[in-house]
Image (cartoon, rainbow, N blue to C red; front, side, top):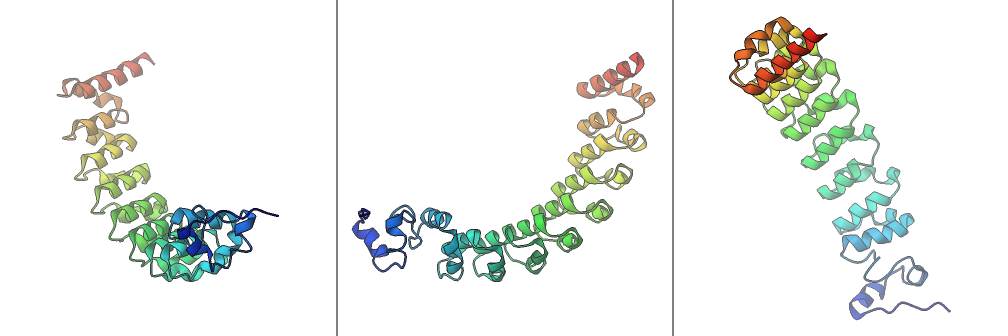
Length: 249
């Protein structure tokens, strides 16, 4: 005869009329205070579904948002599609990571930032352009990391520096001129690091020393001599080191 677990007063109130008491409690499939689908504890609910994945689908319409969210992690993906319109954003955040990417198009207008971030990371490339003007710059930056090179130019004038930095790091070298006069030196420095010789030459005269420093490695060798008088020692040393190396070869 299997020993029944000792149930405290508070725990008993959850087990008393629970439909899993007979089938799960005495068989190691749930445990009061540790693995319980009726508890208002995310950890206990998660442990229950981890051990009983086949039961998750029965809680996708549960009144408790956390129970729905955790059930959505374990239920078959074909059963959670309707939760893209769930009233709770935590539930939708779980769903956006699990449903087929093709369905994410229906969620592009979701009001929750984290949901849209998940969409931007997974949505098919052909739909990324619909998030180019998202009000949140982190979402636009995610789009910029995935957008096909041919469409990146449209983001070169983004109002947020971090987005333009991503664009500068991904644009083909021949197209970097559009960011060479960016108002932010961090963007111009990325341009200088990747610039073709002609553009790098122009950036040797940039007002910020770290942009000039970045341009040294790509600028034509014959234009580096004037940098011997640069006010910043790092720029002078980098120019001298490159000239010495080239002359040695």
